[in-house]
Length: 508
Image (cartoon, rainbow, N blue to C red):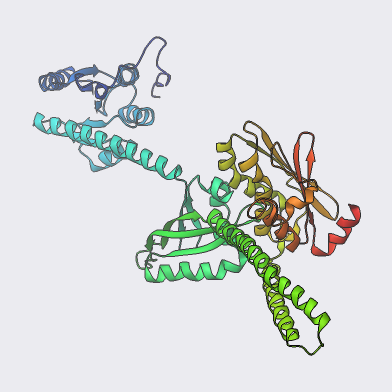
């Protein structure tokens, strides 16, 4: 029975010598493991003449000890050494130091021995007797070059993996069945999903595409496989809370399936989060409408003055003349102008388009907080959100709700006290939910606080809360504002459905 190898850990007090690659002046260290002293010494002498630092071992125990104490750059190993067999020594060296090249120098010329040595981890195989030492030198140099290239490749792979994992976009790979085969760490912050869970769950990718977009996405990806052509596609995915996220998929590589060679198809690409862009585009549209309302109010004030004065003057004249006087036609004409202006106001004040669907108010608050994080941070205001994740869903428009909350909490961006905290809380009301925004601010409130919700006031242009108030009304929500001892309190009551608004009003 072969003797057992020494423990894998080096003996106490023994330290590995630094690798010659750590210092340019250090010679390359070669360990020659050979039981025949004549052969061992001749190999050592030739290697020394070539500029190598040579270590020698006569058996397997000495060889393993030498590798652990003074790690060589290359090992020349004879398989026929006494004691611990050469195969066992090779197996241990490959397991403990897979990056140290081991060249088998053996008197066995059978092909089976060479194959077995390569299976155990040998880098090269030469036979004895060595008729040309230059061949040995070439083998050593080739192994060192392979090691250097392998180290460079490992370093490049590590840098590439680190780069891919830390990109701010989702990098993904799909096979021709649209199963996810790779996704980077950005899957967590961008989509809200654990990347390991996404890889392990069958059908995860298509299962989390928004249902209304699923067939369109499947057709686009299948078409990309058929044409082997790059593509760009915008669609929606859902996060763990079921909130839709607007994303854009851009392919970086598309390979069609090769059935003849058994090669599956592959799509590699990136997912870019467009949710902020889509939301801000919608928000800009709403604010532009409000600006239009302010301009329209100014125009109405101007246009009202002339017809009202005219009506008053002709009314006095009509009292002195007959009812069929010409002035009556002027009154009718001016009245028509007033009616046209009123129609314009009514058309603008019509409710905005509302797309109601079950949505999580907690998710809406999280998204709004994410949008406000940067501006509030620059203002020096911290934001705290308290929203239980188990609150029931409400039947409402999540995009409009987000705009309302951003408008409420956004007061802290312009009027918040630096160094203060703005708190957003959400609680259940039974037939609805209440969102409270409390902030320290010098925002001026009129004597009647509710007037701050109107679209025009003493200052030029619309009031800051007017957009939120109008959208809340369109969603059948209730928005109130009042001054508290510790700051300004904004309250938004959101019914579970439009039919529940009466119950909320009854509850006060």
